[in-house]
Image: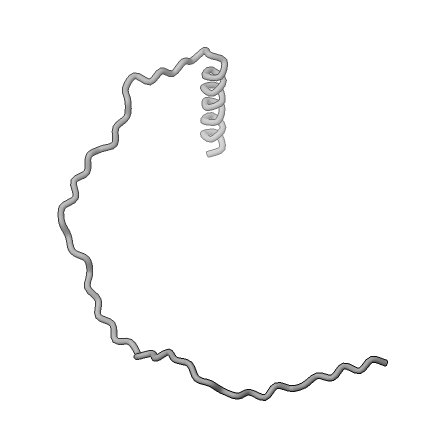
Length: 73
């Protein structure tokens, strides 16, 4: 397994070196296009959910707060 990996690495390095030095030149001969895709109609799944009823409101409430006295020495 190491031998195969090493050989592949050497081959890739030789190819990369050939491209960088200009020994191997790559030229694009044809433009690329995405394939045309046709989508036919479909349906979404339907769900029913039973949830609790939540009511939101406000009310006035009196709350006693503690007092803090600071005495300097």
